[in-house]
Length: 485
Image (tube, rainbow, N blue to C red):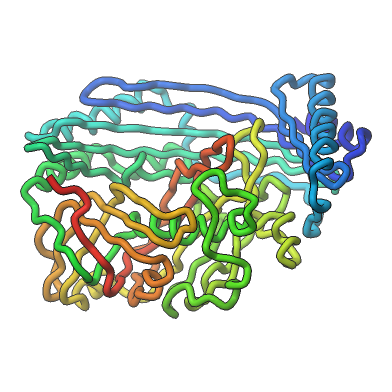
């Protein structure tokens, strides 16, 4: 890995590049799914190659190859330089990068059990055991389970002298029970929807979820939802559980703070952003208790956005995004940081694979814990709807108007959690919504959730992001029925 990266960088400089970096990536992946007592998929793959990024004649060029010989790597680097020189013919200005030091380092995410050393048969048996428990519940139409594991080993080298070796292990698992009755579909997921919980961890994460023990409850709730009350309509107080709040953060904070969207450099997938540069350090994004950070450091937690260095060789860091409700920071790279006058990149450049160009991606964008105990928050709330586990979402291409629905809701009356509510949804305007937040639970109720399926770019890159949140209360929010028969 080391030799290939350094050959690429050296070749690019000889060919006329003023800057070059190369990343060699070895990616191993295993995906398993089950459905109604049968194995759905078992897929294992490995990919190894190099991506070379250069600046020549003031413009970017990128090329990639899996032909990892001296000749193959040299040809790839030469192609990247040729592309940069061709791109320069249409440039409007020279690329300028914020300054960064050189780093020589090794970093590895901590894990206890290597999931690739656990027999596939054992992993399938666990999913089938959970599947069986869900199907024990009369009325469950479809029982599904999944596991996903990814090991990424990467060596990065750059012309400023960086040489960085990193190894990351990612794991995730979840189950879903679906019930179809009287032309209505209801579902319950554990521990979260869209694949469950995902973290930078080993197989110990899967074991900690105890899928089999939770499978019966998941099935029972999916069936019980058919008899539940429809969500009321109108303006109401709502409490969002941490998993749903994690997705709310992702869509209404995480994406709009990506500086390439703000500057119009990325609009192909899901649009741009309402957070124009003139709003930085001026916009009241949320109430005074709302504090949000983008933190890639391991001390924040083993999230899908945790690393030692980003794909420009910038160390992981914590960037204040919202401070006491005030909008204070973007997700940036070396180029975009320089464009808005910042002295340093926010360290958020990441790539899905060796054959994709790094782009700005969310790290762990998290709402900092508050002071409330969960039981005290419920007791302090007279009339509200508690919503948990995302079912669907929609947000405009500026990330300003949104609507979310959740799998399940609960009536809060007189400070007590009461009847089950089905098909709950809520909608609003991003800044109005975050300014309506008046209570956030404390650290003991805070969870760093993983979103493994965030899409961005063209061609699309699917990456994992992290979002920490604790149950929180929002006042005067529009709620209603998401799915009516």
